[in-house]
Structures are given as C-alpha cells and as structure tokens.
Length: 383
Image (cartoon, rainbow, N blue to C red; front, side):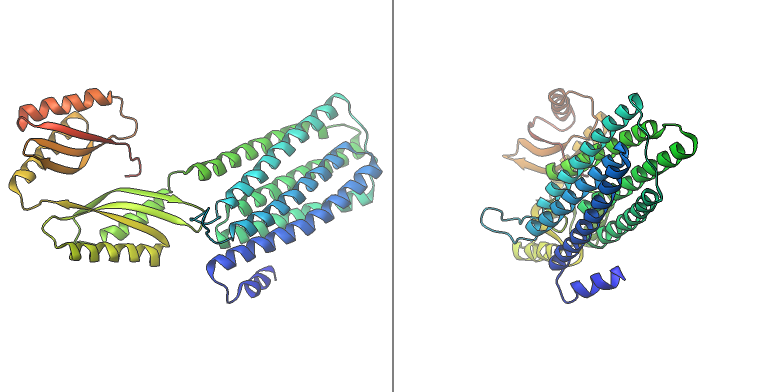
C-alpha cells in the first residue's frame, strides 16, 4: 500500500523532484508515528512510575526531532544551485543525517546513564495489561517504520533515511528490553532491565558513532566505492582510439551530484578537432549513462617518436626495479635534456620520497643519459 502511494505521489516528476518528495513522505510518516509513540509511552510510563519506559518515551521524542530534521534536510537539499552554492545544496542531506546520528549517540548515552542508575537503585514497575499492549504496539510500529525507511532509502539511495531506519530498528531492541524486563520483574521479582539496558545502550552508542563517521567521510570527500570506479574504468576501456588514461578523480556534492575528472592519453599526431570530438563523446557517455559530470584533460603521447618510446620504456623499467608499485605518466622531453613526468606514489610505500627521486635520477644518468629530472609527485590513491 505504501509503495503504491509513493509511486502515485512521484508520478510524472523528474529524478530530483522524486527524491525530494520521497524524503518528505518519509519525514511526515516518521513524524506522525513518533508523536503517537511518544504520547503513548510517556503516558504509561508516568502511570506505571517506570524510569525505563519514560526513557524509551524520550527516545521517541528524539525520533520526532530526527523526523523534523529529515524534512528540513530534504527541503533544503532540493534547492537549485545559486550564485553562492553553484554545485547545489544536496550535501545538506549529509548534514541532517549527521545531526540524526548525533541524536542517536546522545540517546544511547542517556539510556546508558538511566540503565546504570537503575542497576544501583532498582525500582519496581507497576505492570498492567495496558503497558503490555502499548509496548507491543510500539515494537510493531517501529519494525514497520524501520522497513519503511529502508525501502524508501533504497528507492532514492539516501544515507539519511538509512540512518533513520537503523535508529528505528535500534528502538525495537530498546522497547523489547523494556517489555521483557517488565515481564520478568512481574513474574519473578528480579530487576534485570538495568543490566540488559546497559548493554543495549553501548550498542546504540557504537551505531551512532559509526554513522557519524560515515557522514563526516561524505562531507570531507571519501574514496568512491570500488564498483563505481570499475564501472567508470569499463566505460573508458570502450574507447580503443585512446591510448590510456590516468588521474581519475571522483567527488560528489550530494547523492545525485557526482563529478569526475580524468587525463586521457591520445596520439600526439592527432588533429586537435578530432581529439576534442573523442573526449566530447566520453564526457557525454558518462553524463547520459552514469549521471557523472566528467571533465577530460588531453595528454598527447608521441608514440611515433623512437627516442620518446625508448626513454619511456627504460624509465618504466627503472621504476619497476626500484618498486613494483611505482608508475609514471605525462612524460615530456623538454629542451632535449629534461625529462618531465608525474611519479605515482602508491599507498603504503615506505621509501623516503626525496631519496626515491634521487635514486631514479642516478639510474637515469647510468642507463639513459645525462638528463635533468622534473618530477611531480602524484599521490592519487584511486588508480
């Protein structure tokens, strides 16, 4: 039923409008359901004089705030690019998701404190059928809410909704703990909810910290997933007319705003217009099929120059002898006595970089000739 409703609401809308509408639907549903849960739990917690149920109600109150943040986040993220923000506002979704993650962690800390106090000073719960019904209904609603967030998160590839879904499933464990503790106390008189709650609070704190790290990585600019790089490499491999590529850099300004740049190696004898047509074709391919705004930089390679080919081969041999992970690109022979190239430093290399360049210079003098080196260090870890 929900999927049918969502499909009806986003019909005839473009991709960005669909994303915004789905996020707003999730925010409204979450807000309404969390208000109901908060009022229900707070009422029975007050009646039963239960600290754990009241804490669970406060947790639902934090979920209300999270739903409001989700609504605000998607609203702002949907704003088009402007003069101050030429790449749009989609990253605000990461900011709202980060705020949700902080709330999750803070609720975990609060629940940890409440559980610890309960261990030191156990309190009896006035158990009733009403408590059982409300808590059981809360568990069912939270399971549905978590699945709802999960489905909608997959539909629009939203980390914010994924975070909300995880929070909902965490809430299920919390409420189950409260319910089981109340049942055990009612049946046996044992006070165990403080101990069980303490363990669950630690798990919630861990989940919150992990999600905070994920959102901070997105805001700082994290490495693309391996499969994303592989898809782009496969696209570039479809162009046999180019000699190769390097320095593929990918970054985003939101889930739907991916940008990339790459250096394309082409035959130096090509006409400039022909070369431009090829990179135009590649950029269009990335835009239409991968939804990536790609910018290509042309690197001409003198493949018909015997001296260039000989020096290029010998330089690659030198690098392989020094370290199998070393690579170079953009080789230029300037003024007949200067070798200019970019040296790609692999991740985890232990050699001192200055000494490495000096070792290369010595081997060039010995095996190629009296050339000066103009080496630019490249720490690109993507390729």
